[in-house]
Length: 396
Image (cartoon, rainbow, N blue to C red; front, side):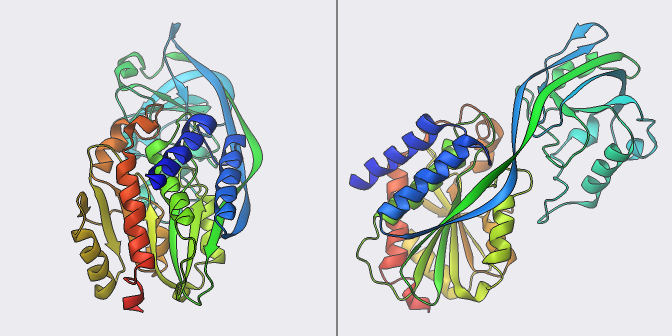
């Protein structure tokens, strides 16, 4: 019960008292400072890994098409604008290659609005067709870009990139019939890009030569309390650190709160990659938590680059517990940072996380009411058993 109360307290602080925590924002800095204090109070050695980033703010937008107002929203991190021009609807990369976009306001629809386009600086996965689309839009001389939302009901952007040099906004699919090539358009985006600082929070327990890393990301998208994504993971790490007092281990435990998983260029992950994962042999394994504790869902784990003895060890411990299940590997998330570097990695999330992502994550509906703190307490105890009960020691 004490663990559960601590978890509830951390969730309340992160989601209700602080709220949305976009990388570089004052709320983000407040959340990082709070987590650092919790780790320090638990007796861990705490380090701030600071980096430069962008804080982005927006104050609405207007879109008028042939005299009619159309609901719209700025794409996250978009440049500001106040422009008028002619609409040009483009449905495919082939069309874009020869489109007369100069001086126009381009609408991306069809296959060009079927999936998110990876940010220019995202290194882990960035298809050639995504890179070409972004390059053609920037070089084509368009005044602005409109994209269809990836959701029929909410403004879910196709382009979310602070390095993209064309103002960009999102419209709902139901309004596409009102947007025809040749119509006169007026678009205003009230946005601003600010230079800012943010930091990963690293906390170390113990002093062994090798280490086990346990990580979660502390940032959110703008406008969401980020309970599942990812205050629940942060709360588990904080409660686990508070539960370690007095344990002697043959390795050290490194807690990492990444700052930037929901930011276009993953700056926190990149600075950690360059400074810590340059020596991957120090790691016994890594656990990354993202989206854990959803009500009515299992606690789902998957393996990456794991030797059979580690896989058997973790699966054996999980088999004795209710509500834990192994799922197939999935590529999104900070666990890829470790597996990309050859570190044996375990990702922990909730079952049906992709269904939740379509409806809940990155929205104002991602609140603590979605979280089952009993599941989070069980996860704290599971990780504590693995780390302190001799299970991991058996594979050394």
